[in-house]
Image (cartoon, rainbow, N blue to C red; front, side, top):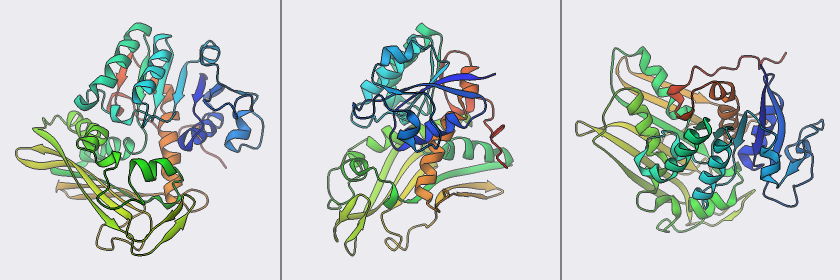
Length: 353
């Protein structure tokens, strides 16, 4: 069965989402929504670097595109500074009976995340009104800190703690606003950036910790956060511009879920702008899950795109985690769903000789 899909957003994740929809044998791209006037009227293939025209023209007319009555909207529009607007965009689709998969409101990876209840409420109500399903996920928050740890605990006799790590060099991420203004790279290490505002880490990634706890039947006593930043030892330059010596060049944060007075479920990010900074911190090129117990397990997922770039590969995985879930989301009962609510998502049909 082929599902008709509208994509919304052509940014870092959105471009790869469009490509994934076009290349998926069970999906048909029928519309694309953009905010930019410069992109409107352009065949989507031109916007995302596909070789052949899709016949789908980007549009700013949201109502006209949704009137095509797709089975699902893949929503990847920017949300960091417009969360309520992003929630309303998703609700707008859901009220029409159109299912939604999205990476934008990643704090809803766990729909019952109390820190994000104000975002979940209008979306949950819209699901009920329209009889539609909504899935907010990606790679992190997403697969690397829900499906990976939950799945591998299935090999445990018992487990005592779970640590979920992202270890990535963001030098090629090329989302300058996010890197500088949200995360604080290029500013002094004591700069009051959005990411480290009190409660921001728990708001963004507490859902990951809570999702694992809920899936494994563990009651968390509390969730709290810690972070550390290190300065660059020399100027560096990349696609996002110049980052000066002495400004933030690496950061490490943890969101910790407490059970029985112990940090039992921990999400950790180790983020660098250059490989030679923070040599004492864990190193890698992707995601790692460490499960203490019997047996102890260390599960690593390192990735790279066709050009050998691991950061871009993570962006691709954010898109494909959504797109490949579309058939399962369309077939699910109405409501907000987490990864563990869905059947196993695989690459069935995606083999290329």
